[in-house]
Length: 401
Ligand SMILES: Cc1cc2nc3c(=O)[nH]c(=O)nc-3n(C[C@H](O)[C@H](O)[C@H](O)COP(=O)(O)OP(=O)(O)OC[C@H]3O[C@@H](n4cnc5c(N)ncnc54)[C@H](O)[C@@H]3O)c2cc1C
Image 1 (cartoon, rainbow, N blue to C red):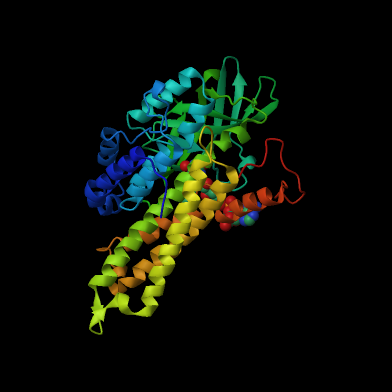
Image 2 (cartoon, helix red, strand yellow):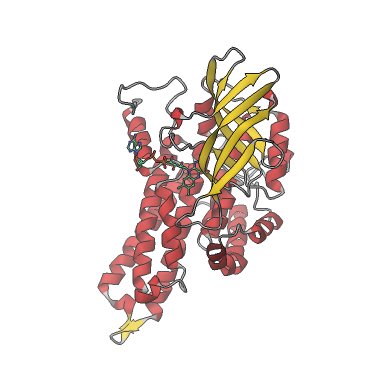
């Protein structure tokens, strides 16, 4: 399929593929089994210049495009989804929000940390505020020359390994008036009051912790507030436009996993013989291979289109949502089909497909569920804001998910 990649992009893709097929692939099973964050792979990515690709060069990055990051994430995720996610979160999401809206000081801090190997954490979800993120109750109260933050977040990717945190909270002025939802930067082990409570025992993606985090009288200076151009009242919606990049990144991890699974099935279908012939001579499996390849091509086209839509800004919300829904759902199907090609062997932990099947399941949930993203798609194509609350009331801070 012609993908219109530049020579530099082909070179980048080739470098990422080489790492993926070599050390990243060799370590993937161990990362899953030991549930240890793959610091060795972080070092590899750092040495290969694959961390902070999208950071502007004046902050030490490579001025890379979203598509550059996508090519790297896709290649890595075919071998190890955890490493692919690290590439997402060092190029998209929290880091891109800070690079777009942060102060000079915040940009320098975030860029330096990412380029040194830190994967920032983005803290939105709370036990009682999942899809309905506007219902968050974490508070940042202005007291003198400080904000005091109290609340609890859960399912925070990287909790316990990430140092830089972008934390969303309801902001109150010194008189106790609510000003909107704001994003604050805090650093684990340097900001007192930021406490990792526990790690979730996850189904897949086990090399990267998902954690519950408590903020207990966490004091932050006003300079920790990342202030988007439209101010605090509309700031949450602005900050969340940056999240469209993370959605494209998540879709890319799913795409990479599906590609990895398809390659395994294709090779095995030639190698494995039953009834005196390779199993890919049975039409039932040929049609499965055909369907898998169609889903992959469609997913890749959607992901690349969404990534390209963000040049000079952030990916388009509709395209990012379409790409994430389709790619995540079709990747689950593709991995499941690939596992079936292996018969009993597919059910063994000696073949990576059972890990891929666990890993890929996440992408219809995290970062906006497939159902909630369908609401985003419907709202965009109908040109209507579709309130989800029972009384039809959309809160002033905006309906972003
Ligand atoms: C592996 C993983 C990593 C994550 N990482 C992070 C992170 O780093 N930072 C962070 O802040 N969060 C993170 N999350 C949280 C994630 O964003 C939320 O899980 C997600 O937004 C859904 O919230 P919930 O789990 O509370 O589900 P709920 O909101 O309780 O939803 C339950 C079900 O109801 C459906 N539903 C809810 N509202 C609607 C509606 N209006 N229309 C139709 N269906 C609806 C949902 O689609 C879902 O099927 C992560 C989650 C996972 C699984």
